[in-house]
Length: 352
Length: 160
Image (cartoon, rainbow over all chains, first blue to last red; front, side, top):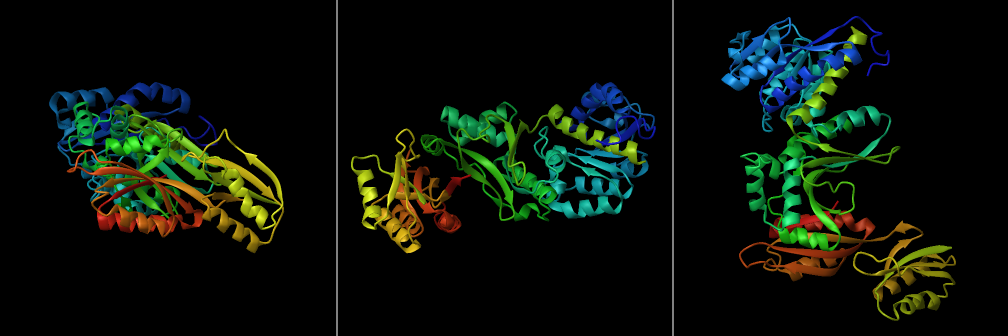
């Protein structure tokens, strides 16, 4: 937060945002903005004003602000945001370009192969001098340098805490709270679905496919779980951490990758016999960038259960620092998005 | 002084056997701490032996003798020298010539134990291997495991 302290900077009262993507996370962001706006004003002296929200059907735009819950209502009742009172048939790039706003919140579906369309939306926001808060690991995992260069060139901020570990403060913790430390190594369990599957396999002695099916029925695993169980989702997050915190220029193709589909209940039992368990671990250091199942001691702080996520930093000054949290969920992920919005709001308050 | 961290099999006479190469090399034993309340993961007993300083050649000869009688010299002067590693293996472990897999690992470290589970002939087996290895050879071992993994379609789950 700005060191000039609260309410002592300029008289900025409103952070205008364009929300791109109205899926589970987009709706979560709207709920959180609605619930927290009064608190934000009391604590930080500004509110978040949603001036546009977009989905593939079009957009709703009102530069005086739109009630967040009305956007959710229209989306849930009609399936299309264009049916909102302020609805217009404009495509997302046009909205980003034409609407006057401070920040674009980018929460469209992740595409790990091309990073699109999130990449184009993010670049368009930068070109039109808007800051970006993103939860989208796809664009970051395939085009990190291009995005960062564009943000720098246009002198805007790019914040993406929600892209790694959902509600867990991973990037901002390392960049801000551990500032001055040399981070030697980062390890973590950054995919809740695989952690849930391995935890259940270990506990119940059932095979991978049985537990996966159960997880799908419970809505914990996606209908197409490939990105999770193959390790690709974790790999994208490790690329983001490597590039952001270790100054690398990796893409997802650089990750040595092995998923959890071959893990058997017998293998977990074997691991248990020697006081260990098997987890899908992402690891990055100067020598290594890999995602694969690994043995960790049962009493190790990274042995988190169920769908929890964990990240462990090995640093020169603070030594080992571990953070555990919920890696997914609409409100949890929105918590990370909100923290980035507050950071931008406070910076804007002091810098404008 | 030189501090040696040894790991002995838990059978009668092992401590005496371990001290003999030291005394026959005229190493002056200052203290022996037998840590019976602690055990390594493979059930060995840690013993700390402190001896008077001797030259490097004599020390290395003592270590060779200790290892030849199956005493693991885990640390010298607190510096870890040997490591016990567990590796879980998933795949057709036996059908892909488990003897060859062990022999290749033994060229770098030493396979101490193999636990195997074969639930049915048509599904992949799971195995656990305990390997003792010099700390500086871990990268070499992991490279060899990667080669074997590709060649035999085995998944090696290594320690974190």
